[in-house]
Image (cartoon, rainbow, N blue to C red; front, side, top):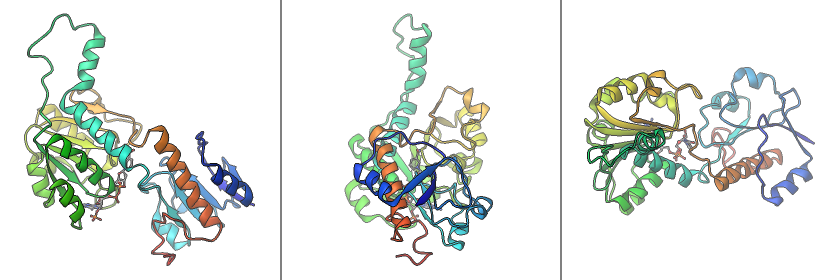
Length: 316
Ligand code: NAP
């Protein structure tokens, strides 16, 4: 029998083969963590740190139902021989779709226009009202051309945009299919009309974009963040939006979720979403299935398909 700590009850209908395998292994899902816990299947809200790990000596796997693992102390897990897994790929397209939802909404002031209609103030057609920014033919900067960054860049081709990107390694196939150009971080800031953030949250990327970087951006640029809130300094962003240095921003993630910086809440030129990048029915189901497949493999003593620290644990 295996005991899995699952602080959140996923209501999704999952692949019957996974359900059968869980039954065959005698898996019991529990809402509490204790000394006999074999595995954790969790969301970003669960902070897996040294203190938590000390309470679960039998733990084999932390299966995060997300691609980002910034809520997990991965080195501490590796030290204890605990494999950490994530759910890459299955959420790439949904998250890129949401980055584009934010980009278009921020550029064309869609939520502001909708609020205006609902307010009852729309009394006559107004030639000058709610003018936004062009999207087609402009320059999209991708900060971190990994899976989601590239998927976001691919969509720009349909809008005849020029694509710039940063990445520690060159992405030749991406360059070939989108005509994207790899540039350094400063050039990305200076040349992008739209800058979309797709790096993971790490020690190096925390507050990667602050007052100094915002000052380097084009006047009237639009910033999109669907990666992680702390990559962006929200107080500096609010100032840049208020002063008009940036025309707009679209944010799905925040520094202290679910709290949002009060200055952002007062601004009309920022689109605010409650961290819904992967929130489509099929994506959420596939994320749970991926996390459970990872968990099943680890409990059976096999190498899980998405081991973040598999290399460090010599599992590959
Ligand atoms: P990925 O494939 O690993 O892409 C991350 C990219 O960032 C890679 O290109 C990596 O390339 C680059 N990178 C890493 N550290 C960097 C640094 N210090 N400076 C510059 N580039 C750096 O990950 P993904 O699947 O695209 O996911 C990206 C992030 O999106 C996740 O970590 C997660 O936080 C976020 N996300 C959010 C939602 C949501 O609901 N809003 C949903 C899914 C994912 P190099 O290593 O070559 O530099």
